[in-house]
Length: 114
Image 1 (tube, one colour):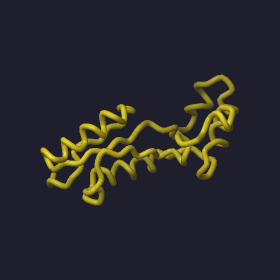
Image 2 (tube, one colour):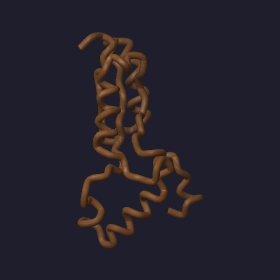
Image 3 (spheres, helix red, strand yellow):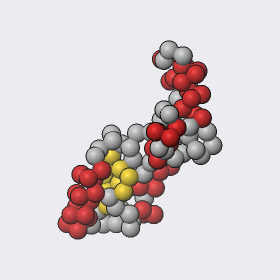
Image 4 (tube, helix red, strand yellow):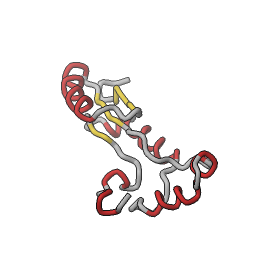
């Protein structure tokens, strides 16, 4: 791994202040960058329909509130961002959260009555 490569990729929903605070000192000391890929609602067949009461209705409700295409995120879309974060193409990116959810995380739930 070169000094411009990404040194950390988390996916567990680690808190933003920790990621941002540590990313600066970490990259100054090591030359490595950090990035966080929080959990997103991902489409996996039967996740909602088999494991939830009224799963079809729940899935339809969630999809209707996703601004970008009214659809769930695919595992490939998450993988594409993860690959970007560990590649040289992200060499000048550090301490950022990358939400791959079609804009769902940025919705004002009070307005939407979720």
